[in-house]
Length: 440
Image (tube, rainbow, N blue to C red):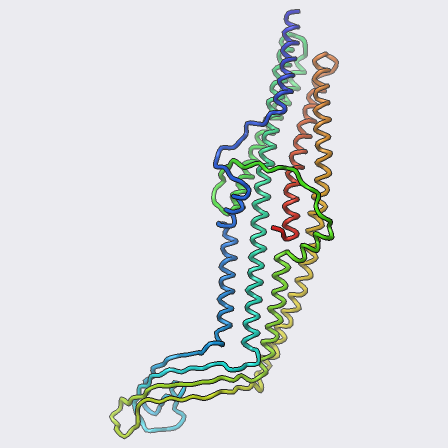
């Protein structure tokens, strides 16, 4: 009778302890520097190589705009020419010798200058084309930025989810180990059979196996986070917890309209269409004349010993009107190329627009579904915990077997795992919906 009372007291206290620890957090808090979600995003924006390359691409596009603007400014060049024989330097400071002249040796130095006066919009449209291309590259850089930010957010939330799953797995081990000690006490007092003890030991082993897997998944999640931030290593951080509550999204039609006006991919394709339109205008304007003002000045000195030759300073100025009559269909094909590029960009815009709409719909439906699943999962956890408490009481009173307790405990663990997984998946879906509408 004394052994029986001791065993009942032990199991009663043990089940009370299990009820207490079931609500305690795990001891799997990683050691490392503290990191908030905002800090992780800021680190990625500063150090991720994808964004650095995008910045260089924008700088290159800006330089091309300035190159296209160069005809607006005077073009000045200097030259020094030394000729021998029948060659002479012409007014544009180029050696020429179309006519046979007495041989002589000269040295000529000078400068030439030209200024575009009017070209029927050729330079203007080239500049506008490069500006639109620069805007396109900037929008594409914005798309890369959004990709990096959503990657960090997903990785950060995945780490938090894995940490929670580790806590649940460690909590399960502690609870099952406590139950095993209780059943072992009953077995040694010949109150329960060895079969009960064996079933509990199997459950403990399964829980330990789950802890190993959960910790490995957590390490992988930390590695993904550092990679998403664009830094080396797989350091573990102490992450700031993020509330897992999510709100109902706006109406789907409103989200689709917002995505069409904000997604950087669509804005970049609009700029690509504008680039092609300006290239069409620039190519078409090649059919018209180009008017330039030109001038040169220099000094010619004779090296040969012929004193009767005239030498000294000189200058000249004039205008050039060049008219293309036939260019071997060059201009026509340049127009055709730019027109095809415009049509290609318009078709690509429609393709990406359909993809964006689909992304918004999928993420919207995923978020709505997960919000509904969270409610169900919370009810499952509450029901499972109540059933587990009843199973422990029935087992304590000898009204059921240990199988009922272990099955109830497994059901609670599965429900808590499902709830945590669903809550963090909902946070990830919420972030992906913001990304889909261009709000990142």
